[in-house]
Amino acid sequence: MQNFDWTLIQSFLAVAENGSFSAAGRTLNISQPTIGRQIAQLERQLGTPLFRRDNRGHKLTEAGTGLVEHAQAMKAAAARMSLLAAGQSEVLSGVVRITASIVVSHYLLPPILAHIRRQEPEIELEVNPSDATENLLFREADIAVRMYRPTQLDVITRKVGTQKIGLFAAKSYLERRGKPETMADIADHDMVGFDRSDAIIQGMRENGMEVDRSFFKVRCDNQTVYFEAVRAGCGIGVFPINIASTDPTLVRVLPMVRVPELPIWLTAPEALRTSLRIRRVYDLLAEGLKAVAGG
Image 1 (tube, rainbow, N blue to C red):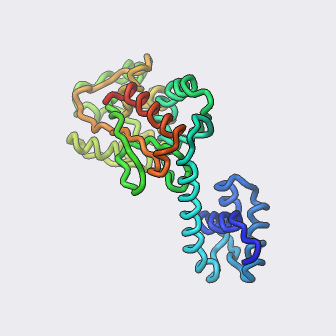
Image 2: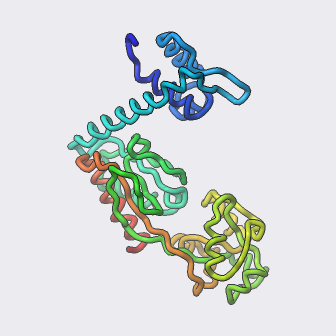
Image 3: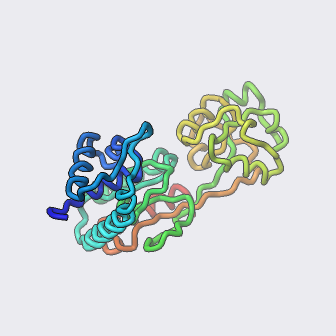
């Protein structure tokens, strides 16, 4: 291929992975027409169509399917080059991108980020609140805060604390429905549950209550919306103690009930160990999270 352009391969791979020009554009933060022009340019250079259009988006042709594995290998190689280059940084300035769960991003990170900015004013911080698992090796983030021990190869990890979990209800709800005294009393109460996740269901079964999804009359997987539903009086909910206990509208119920704790892990690509700014933010995040979560 003459005049090879990596951006064309990026666009090809984004369409292949997302199924449409519009979704690929959102992933790469460029317009749909730009994606279309880049795919057309790549097809001209290769002399073959790579996608066919149907009513659900864009499907790979046989030629396009044959290129996907090679494009993925190129993406991985480019990511490794980026990591190695970033790892050589010796200055405390530049951008550090952090990804964390929606709960951690919303309730725990802001004061920690403010502290980092005071300590290192030349470092720019980007935060991606997400409950998805970003791929650190593809530089989707420089540092990740995980609620599980990462198993991905070529990353460094540090356990910085645990999130203790408890049951909480709004004062308004308890005034209306009364306060449960035993786990058995929960059967006569409303509980706010998760939509797709079965974490609360499994926790209740471990405490001797056989329930299913229909037991929860309000369900939501977005943790900030979930928290607001509990605060509004929709029912009893499960939430980190260090966050919910600071809200004067909430009361902890059934403190004797055992709810599994969540570990807090910091993760970054091994190749970034030598990046001074990322190492500095990593250490300050660890310090801040340990203080608010408890070791």
